Image: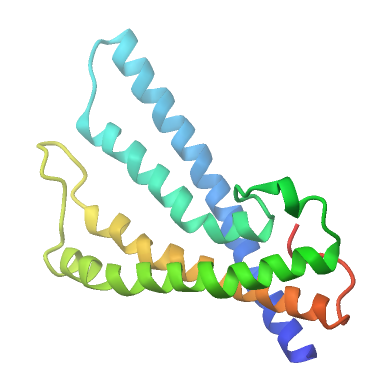
Length: 176
């Protein structure tokens, strides 16, 4: 069981590190939006590149940051029942949710996006708009990468939940 805990802690550490990097990208997104707004209202001009960069960064933040969000229990859920449960009740809901919903959903998206991403990389897909970002294939590559990080974090959540159910882990450490 110590081996499982080491795996969970390594996954938690990876997503913590990734999440801190994504926070800097968020700062970059704020700056890009600020520049776009100033250009639009002060100079009455706008660039397709800037607008596309906004949604590329936005997509990157949400895709790559999903595992970090799960690590810190930041995903939306219906808390009517969950919040009233003790550690064991929450562990059961988390374990069942990970096994029957998170794993299949992540695997489905990873598997179905691989060909989509491969094709985009093979043709070095860029924006169809004049002046757009020529590297659209890069953002498409974050789809399976982000869901792999989410799948890994789900694995960690499942391990923590299992250990809580077995009485080998008392707190929700690594999940908040």
